[in-house]
Length: 98
Image 1 (spheres, one colour):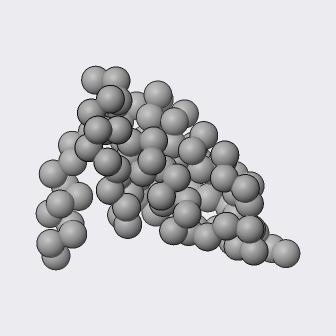
Image 2 (cartoon, rainbow, N blue to C red):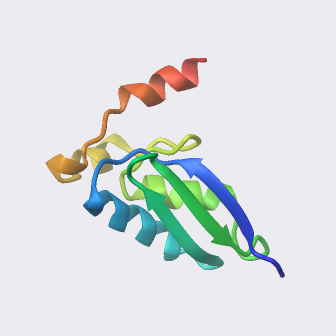
């Protein structure tokens, strides 16, 4: 099957975030590649949609402490991130109100 390609926003700041975000996505069965850009905060994932889906990818990333457009990370996970990884969370709440 042809892999699906999707792009979505994942909140983060630095190279450590990039490693964590990409690992969370890549650890999912069915994900072929995950590439997060810290300038745009956009991740591009290629995945086999017979093995996983977009929602699962969002959830996996949120589980390691990074908010996405669909899923918010648990506060306790976010609070445990290193200081340099603590991104501005206000933006997400404003967006969800729109």
